[in-house]
Amino acid sequence: LDNKQLESDTVSIMSSLEFTCSGTITGFLLGVDVRTETADRVEYPTIWLWNKTDETTYTRVDDSSVEIILGPSNFNTDGVYQFSLSTPLQFTANQVLGIYQPAGGDSVVRFYHH
Image (cartoon, rainbow, N blue to C red):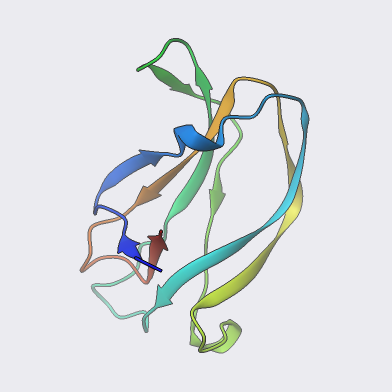
């Protein structure tokens, strides 16, 4: 696998994972690096749903944010974590997931993709 860290302090739109139907997300299987929270490292990534308005434009869906709060106490050491949602996330066709990754030094959790 060629794993890459998501770019810091940006929203990465997962356009290749555009939904073609309606449904419910109850959790995520995540590839992450979890670091100890410190006085300066207190931010966590957020996942949102985005509506695709055209080939290059997306608008964020209100009330669809999921903050990914993980720490050494609730994370296994193989880098993969099953994150269950307390409230399922409803999606419809033409929506995609977007992940906000706080700046590297500020973020407790760092996402990876391949």
